[in-house]
Length: 292
Image 1 (cartoon, one colour):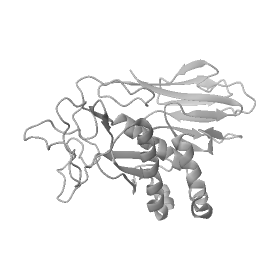
Image 2 (tube, rainbow, N blue to C red):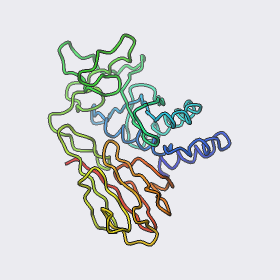
Image 3 (cartoon, one colour):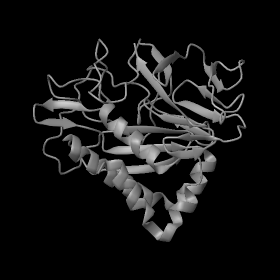
Image 4 (cartoon, one colour):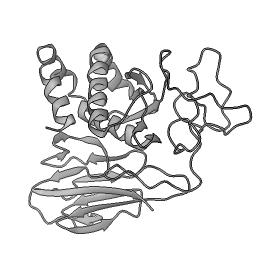
């Protein structure tokens, strides 16, 4: 049984169905769990043949409405998500520098149903394998990551989270807090493509084996000839839904008769990831994105 499926089953049995009421919001726990898995994959740092280190401290940013719904359960949900990360790391043979923690935070710039994940690697005080601190004048950590200000931002105030340690000589750069490689690193097999510096993200959808490129910021799906991609299905409305590409990409129902199902969840709005399955009427649409 997959890690995400086990995670969903554990949630179903918690607090006599409390979570079933809370998670009627647009953001679903399995979406957050999947994002944490991708965060591990995209920030994995190879130390040696037998050790690949991934982040262990995560912050999930939610819109104000979603945060208000979930914050009373943040401790229990954080523990469940941390357990899911631990299970996934065991499956992938990842290791951590310290205890796994997952926190929820409110982000006023996010709309309902959208979320953002930040992560970092924090070594525990008892860790004997922590890498040495960077030498003065060494490489500058990646800007804009969790715990770091973006370019041009004020310096961190006193008391801000400590900077992660530097990798050992020969370690693969590009993990959280490490300088990015000179050339975009190839993604891990099966991992969602990362946003490499200087590269361009391509977006497309697949319907019944046919690929449709998304060359504009929005793409309308529907039965009408005015839709960007026409779907000849009696269960599809004339203007059924709209895909918006970005970071992250999203899908929005346009008031259709039968609604949309994204990754098994009936919804009116959802975040899309590479491989997301969208069902409109009786037609399945696969959303894809890749760097290149």
